[in-house]
Amino acid sequence: MRTITRRTALRGLGTALALPWLEAMIPKGAAMGATATVAKAAAGPRRVAWLYVPNGIHMPNWTPTTVGADYALTPTLQTLAQFKQKMLVFTGLICDKANANGDGPGDHARAMSAYLTGAQPRKTGGANIKVGMSADQVIAERIGQMTKFPSLELGIEEGKQVGQCDSGYSCAYSHNIAWHSDTTPVIKDCNPQSVFDRLFGNNDPRESAEARATREARRKSVLDFVLDDAHTLQNQIGASDKRKVDEYMDSIREIETRLARTAQEPPAPLPEGAVRPGGVPREYPDHVTLMCDMLVLAFQGDLTRVATFPFASEASNQNYPWAGADVPHHGTSHHMGDPAKQALLAKINVFHLQKFAYLLDKLDKIQEGNGSILDNSLIAYGSGNSDGQRHNHDNLPVILLGKGGGTVNTGRHVKFDSDDVPVTNLWLAMMEHVGVNRPSFGDSNGKVQLS
Image 1 (cartoon, rainbow, N blue to C red):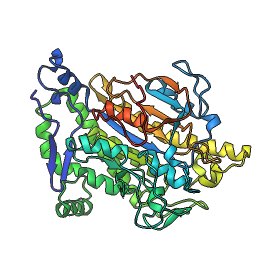
Image 2 (cartoon, rainbow, N blue to C red):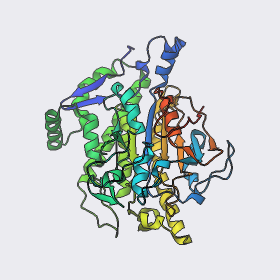
Image 3 (cartoon, rainbow, N blue to C red):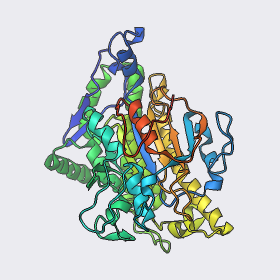
Image 4 (cartoon, rainbow, N blue to C red):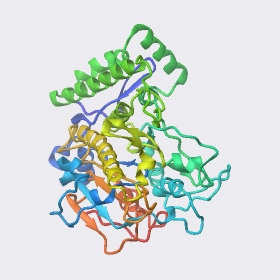
C-alpha cells in the first residue's frame, strides 16, 4: 500500500472529488509514533463550525440546575443525550455588543451580527454597514489555504442584504452571521444543489456547467465521471480504506438522488406565515437535513475545515408544524409569560436540536484514526439571544460538541462565576484549539479553558 497525499482527488469532466481521510494518508512511521506531528496527522484534521438558531431559547427547559460532570440534562438538552460525553454546556456567556449600548431598539439585528464578531454593529439602514470580522473568518484566513474552500457558509433563509429589517438596522445584520471584514458579510448559500456543485466542481465554471448539463441529459452521477480514477485508487489502498471510499461515494450518490427527486416535486402549500426555503427541497425539515449532509460531505472530504450554518435568520417567523408548533417562531418567542406559547417555543427548540443531533450522528459515525470526525471537531450551537421575550443577551444558550482532536475535556456543564463572560472568550479558545493563536478577539477579556 502506497502513501497518498491529503490533496489527492479523483478527477473527471467538470469534477474534482476530494477523498475522505484515509489510512494511506498517514506518513510512514506514524504507526510507531515517530513524532507529535505525525501523530496529529494520523488523528485527522481539526475542524470548527457554528450552528445558529434565532429568537432565543425557552431557557427554563434549557439550563441545567447542576454543574460539573454529573449535571442532569434538561428537557430540551435531553435531545442530545447520546452526545452528553462529547458536549460542553455553558452558562454565563454574554454577547454585550448585541445590547443597545445607547443605540436603542434592534436586538435581533445586533444578536446575529455581533454573535461571532464581538463588535457593535453601526446602526444604519444604508450602505455604510460596519460590524467586525467574524471568528470563523479569522480562522479561515489562517488555515483556509489547506483546503479547497477556506470556509463554507450554509443557510436556509436567504434574506435581504439591503434595506432596513430591524428598527433602523440594515437587513445585512439580521441575515448574516459570517463577516469577511467589518464592512463585508459572507453571503450564505441556501441552495443544496448549488452547494453540491461547488463542492464537487473543478473550479472551471464553463467546464462544470458542461459537466452538469451532460449529467442531467444522460442521468449520470458526478461519480460516473471519476470511475477510472477511482478504480486506479482502489488498487493502491488497503481494505479498510477501500471501505471508507465506498461509503463516501455511496453517500454522495444518495444525496444526488435526493436532490434530483426533490427538484421534481411540485410546490407544496405553505402553512400560514411560513417562509419558503431558498432552494430545494420545498419543505423546511428536508432542506435543513440536506444542508447538514452537505456539511458532512465537506468535512469528510476535507473540502473545508471552517463552516457556519444558521437554521434561520434573526426574527424569522418560520412556522414549525412538523414539530407540533404550527405558529410563527418570532411571534411565539414573545410569549408574554403565556405557558401555552412557552410550550410551543420549547417544541421548536427541540426540533432544531433534533436536526443538530442528525448532523452530529453522521459526523460521529465517520471514523478517523481512533476517533471520528466529531471527535476531531469543535462545533458550537447557540443563539445571540437568550430569552426571546426579554431580548436579553446574557446567559446565552451555548453548547460545544466534539473533542477538538482530544484536546477538550467534555461531558460537563460549565457555569461561570459571573454572568458577563464574553462569548468571544469561547471563540478565542476555539481558535487556539485549531492552531490559531491570538491575544484577543472582538470584546474578549480572557479565554475559556476547554482542556
